[in-house]
Every structure is written in C-alpha cells, then in structure tokens.
Length: 605
Picture 1 (cartoon, helix red, strand yellow):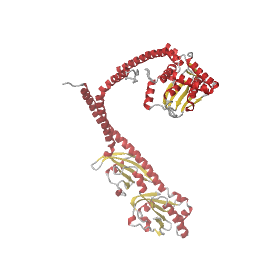
Picture 2 (tube, helix red, strand yellow; picture 1 turned 90 degrees about the horizontal axis):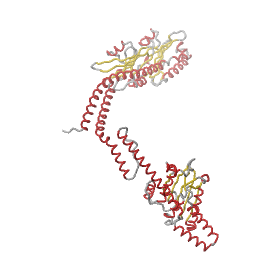
Picture 3 (tube, one colour; picture 1 turned 135 degrees about the horizontal axis):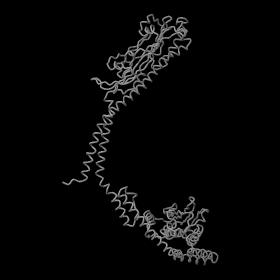
Picture 4 (tube, one colour; picture 1 turned 60 degrees about the vertical axis):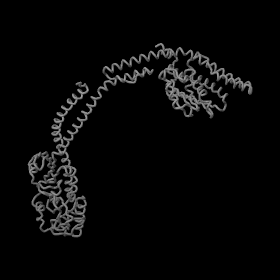
C-alpha cells in the first residue's frame, strides 16, 4: 500500500509533538503548583501586612483623641476639681468637649466620661449629652477595675453589643450594634494622679472596610483576633466577639514568628493559613487569613489549561503547516512562471524582491540579473533608435501643419483686404518667426523664455484666426526664464488643443500656461485648456501608453515623454489629467539645468 510523504509527515509530527508536550505539561503543572503556592502565600502576606498598617494607624487615630484633651486647661480643671464646683460652667465645658469627641469620627457610637472627683459620669449617645450621673460602683465595670489596678493607660474591649454606661443612655433593642470600646485613663499632669476614664465606642464599619480589602468574600476567610483570642472582626460576622478555640489558632499562637503560614489538611479545611501578629495599642493582636487549596492552586490549573490550549493550537498549526508545506515549496516556481509569462507579453519587469535564501532564492537572483541585462540591451537599442530618429524629429520640427498654414494664410489674405499694410506686416513677421524657429535644427535645448515666445507667436496667429473665441494667459516666474528646456516641447501640446478639443467646444476657448520653480533643482510647467477633454477610459489609455515602448496613437505626447526620458531620465516627469478649467492638462516637471550632452553620454556608456 502506497504511504505518501505527506501522511508520514503528519504521523511523525503528531507523535513528535504530542509525546513531549504531554510530558512537559505534567512537569510544568507540578513545578507551577509549588511555585504558585509560594508566590500566592508571599502575595497574601504582603496584603495582610498592608492591612496591619492600616488597622494600626486606625487604632492609633482612635487612641490619639485623648492626648489633645490634656492641652485643654479648662477641661483638665474640671477633671481635677470635679463637676460640682461651678456646676453650670463645668457642665458646659464637659458638654462641649464630649460633643466634639463624638463628632470627631463618624463611626463613634458613644462617648462616656467618668470623673473620679465626685464620681460623676456623662454619656454622649445619638448626638445627645446625658444628664450627670453618680457612678458609685465604677469598679463593677471589669475594664475600669483593671484600669484602677494596673498602670496600663488604655484597654481595648473586644467586639460586643453596645451597652449603656452607668445607665445614662437609652439604647433601644433595635439600635443595638456591635462595637469595639477604647477605655483610657486620664491622669493629672505632672503628678500622674488618676482623674477619671474616657471610653469611646466605635462601630465596626471602618474596621470592616479595611478588613474587606484583605480577602475575597465567599472564597477566603478572614480573622482579626485580639490577645485574648477574641474575634474583633471575622468574615463570618455572626462570630464577631466569640473566643477562638480551634487548633489552627493554638498552633499559630504558639509560633514565635511575627508572620508566616500554616498548612492544614484536615477534614473541615484543606488549605493554608497566612498570619501576621502586630501590636494594637498596648495589646498583641493578630490578622489571619485562610485560603483553600482550590483557590490556592486555581492559578496553577489555569496555567496548565492555558498550556494545554496553547499546545493544542500549536498541534493544529503544525498539522496545517504540514499540509501546506508542499504548496509552500512550489510557490517560488509558480512565481517564476508568472514572471516569465509577463515577459512573454513584453513586460520586462520582475515582480518579486527575493525568493528566499535557498536554491530558489539563488535561481531568483540569476533570473533577475538576466532580465536586467536584457532590459539594458533593449534600452541601448531603443536609445540608438531614438538617436537615429532625432533627424526625423528635426525634420518634423521644420514642418508646419498644412491645414494651419492654409488657414493662417487665408486669415492674412482676408485681413490684407480689410486693413492692408500694418496688420498684414505684423502677421507675416509672426509667421516667419514661427517658421524660422521650427525649421532651425541646430539647437536641441533653448531657454524657457525663447520657447514661450514661440508658443506666444503660435497662439497670436490662432487668435487672429478665431478672434474672440480664443483667450490665452501666461503666468511665468521671472527667475526661470533663462533655464533650459528641450526645444519644441511645449508647442505640440498647445497644438493638440486645436487639433482635438477646440473645434467642438461651443464656449470661448481658453489656454493657460503656468511655469514656476518648485525647489532648488526643478521647475514645473502646466499647460491647461477648457476643451471638451477626454473620458476617464481614454485618459487611462493615454497614461498607460506613455510608458510603453511601442508607438501609440498619442504620438505627440508620447514623443514629448520619450524625449524627457532620454534627456533627463527619472529626474523629469510628465502627468496628464483633467484640469481646473475642465479640459485637458499636461503637467511637466523638468530639472532647472541639464546638459544636453546627457543623451550622447548615455549612448556612449
């Protein structure tokens, strides 16, 4: 059974691609799993480290409310002397101070002040200051009792439902919120004598906002824990205020590192805990975040799937490439055949830059070299042929359209009968000047000024023939009048107007010639008329005929184009198009100075 190279190539490349790809995917997955785990743990440690900074700064902001009160001399006098002395003035100071504290932050729910001198206490809740109350059994409050017995200036009461201090605030059951309380001692300065306590209850909105930036709700669990193991805030909000007893907490608590990770593989949880211990004001707190393995390895699986997808795409690409390789091999040959067919039609141009760096590329280089040599030989023959016909051109220059001569002489004769000597003499002089310029074959190049005078003479004679039916206008820059152009290169263009476009035009014929310098090296001459013009199809045919080697119907324009190419090569150009006057426009771009010996030098080479 015949087994083609294409089938063998398909089978070989499929095996050679699938086997190493499968092995590489497996190795990559194992390596990526460990790498992603370490990277993920490191990124989450950075996240909770930033959260620790935000929480520490927030707690610091709350505890920094008290120190400025020491600078309030009036308030400190009340704390030292008690509220009863100057009761109205002192209560006004107390009210102003506590209200200011209450409105310091939006999350403050309640402010309580205890004045030891007189056992007086005040509470601000729901924007209102309570009446003065006696706090006889202040040590019944566990945190106040601890502040009495220890030198600690501040204690933080973990998450708990808000309650009324000394029964001074009325808090409806429907308004009970979870709060964290900051209890601070107030001392006299400089004697360090205890003057009272200031308690600030804050609701958890800001702590929650900071915490929720550190974990993905519904995917990861988050715990903010104080030094007693109480949950200040948890991703499971119903557990706020509970004391943790789980084994993972005990293990993290026993670790001496301030941050790190703990891998757990128990029935209820399989994943990793990342943690960071930090100091809240005067207390050791901890941030813990749990990440299931499903989340941890999600990126690894995504990378593995991506590799599989990329591999599958690569296999498809390989198979497609194998299928088209034969076509790719034969494409240079096809390109060579297409170029050979164009050459057979007479278009001696190569339509490719290179066929590559292999044997086909070498073949293409030799093919291009061969065509260049053929073009060079044809160009030499063509130049010689043009040179041989230059004599014929000069003879043509000496010939004047018989029809034109007949009409001109008829006009002169008619004018002679009407006006006699002066006008007849002027016309005869113009005609003789025109004939002399055309017949003189000693010059190949003349100045633009001389060529324009010849054109003007020709148009003046036509003006005598057609009268008001003809108008013409010249706009020539003075700076280029002495520049050289090929002789008899403008008059044939002007004559074409009268041959092809003037007679059938019902409106007044208009001819306009504009010449100006466009840069340091070139000038531009535009000859335009308002004749009937040519169709788009005919215009395209004229443009295409100019660059052909073979002679075409547009002999005059073709002759001018060929002469420009012979004299100037690529430095000159000739464009034809519909002009602003609505007729036909010829646009010539010619070097300002050019030696006429260029033709002889080209032929000699």
